[in-house]
Length: 187
Ligand code: FNR
Image (cartoon, rainbow, N blue to C red; front, side):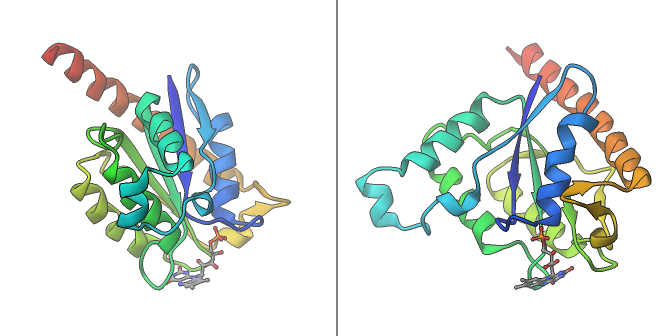
């Protein structure tokens, strides 16, 4: 099984980037987790650009999401919501004709130095994912609070957090298999 990851922060020392990079090692056996290109590579959504032709980065990320068994979104929280770059990427992907997000098994996680761990951004993100008809796992949720104390040298270092995240990934693995089995039964 292959999962792809969209990261809602674009800075090099991103705590969410560290969380995203930890996922491949924490995922269940038989699952590979690959980080998608930075959302910073997509221009700001513009209907005129769309009319002239989708930017290559948008089409390419769309194809990678479409081909993957599942999508993981790891996001920062900006002003109680998701970063503009992530919203922009989701807006672009929502415009692609083959609708890569529709029905896609999707997992949300967030990291923040605050004690809330990005919880408020997660609920805004869930609302956006309703619009694109993604198939989002409800629980268990992962909000990595006080994430600055759990990341060292660009890696998710805290053993309890790694265990907690691994537990969520195991639950998501079961969720993805269930969604795919349902699709197969429907033909
Ligand atoms: C933040 N930060 C933040 N944190 C939070 O928990 N709730 C919030 O509403 C906000 N708002 C906010 C707005 C803006 C514009 C910035 C730049 C930052 C702090 C944020 O969580 C922190 O900078 C994280 O380290 C960002 O994630 P990355 O880049 O480390 O992944």
